Image 1 (cartoon, helix red, strand yellow):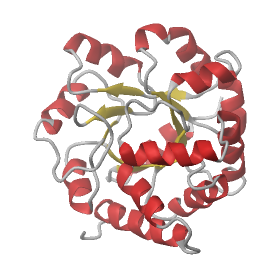
Image 2 (cartoon, helix red, strand yellow; image 1 turned 120 degrees about the vertical axis):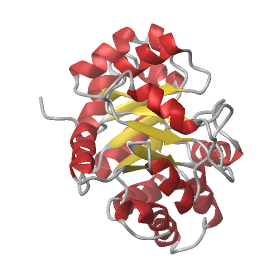
Image 3 (cartoon, one colour; image 1 turned 45 degrees about the vertical axis):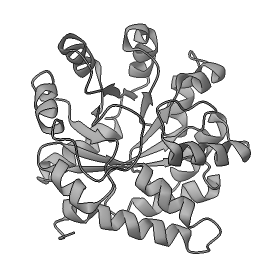
Length: 270
């Protein structure tokens, strides 16, 4: 089986002596066509992995910015099947790794047994199922493994050492450390506890650790990149999308913002 794109990309990032940038957008916000265009544009803007959020009606872990994005996508009638079709379209001209950031309900409606093969066929590389407890996801994780897909695990500030070890050992592609408790959203500063928590996670696994939730400026990206293997930005990008809806140059404006965020990782001063 071919090497997973996430593993290959993060190995390239490591070999180049830099840190990875992971960009989150909600699939279908404001349209699926725009999602495809953004993903392709991000590929040349310093993004190493794109996370496509699968719109869901009850996004408990998301702040208001991402909630509004999901609502816009749902009003467009966007389903998981549509998101897979968008991935298929992205894959016609882009090999950037793609992770689906989803609640488990849409996957269950699609079919837990049939989803892994369908996702691989579409060109998905990894799944991050926010509300699927790792203790209950063994069969699903094994099915993803069979298809060569990564199941990315979330670790939170409240995770116990015992569970942290289990999650770190079972995560594939990268480990997503949630930098603070609560929901997604921009913050003025990175929590002081993030660095020691990343170091603890790294003591349990050699899998790269990416930090997200609350990171929204080039300065914060540079700070987190000093000790994490990757930086995840979501709400700040989604806010830029929201603020440019209706403009013909939405993709260019949002991509320009992303280029500013990735500048420290590309050796450009923020």
